[in-house]
Amino acid sequence: MRSLDKMVSNFNTIPAIPGTMPQFGDGSDDLFAQLAPLTQSLPDVAPPADLLASIEAELDAEPEEPTHVQRSDEGEWVQRADLIWKKILTRDPESGRCMYLLRCLPGARIKPHVHGRAEHLFIIEGEFWMNGKLFMAGDAQCSLPGTEHHEITMPNGCLVLVSA
Image 1: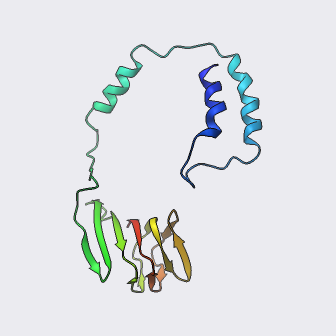
Image 2 (image 1 turned 30 degrees about the vertical axis):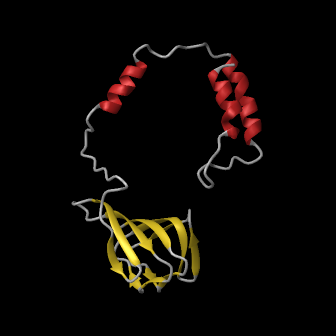
Image 3 (image 1 turned 45 degrees about the vertical axis):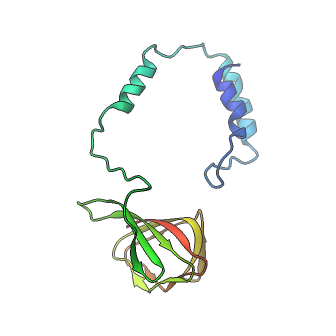
């Protein structure tokens, strides 16, 4: 069996974390069945002999741009409010934007506020209530500049990745 045939036949058996794979609907098997015969007309082609070496060289090369890496055991959790801690992961000195984790223990509250710039967040675990809506693990949200939030409550606590 050709490698593309294997890929097509195995595609729907790949385990996925919920919400991380597109839903192809009922037509996906039909599409793959239509594409599979096309692979029969393709010649077998061996990859270039130096392909692996060139990939490894690229991976081992120094990055062209400076890259900041922070390991999970690095950084400092700073208490920002009662029951709320923040750990900055990255900061862009030019724009002032940063990415951080927000750990909110059960019962935490964030006071009403207005966003001065866009803020993107992804709920890693737990849940919170904002403007009458429940946000749960796996949900993402973007607040544009000028967005007003009423008090945000975390009755059961949460861990949120924020880019602001």
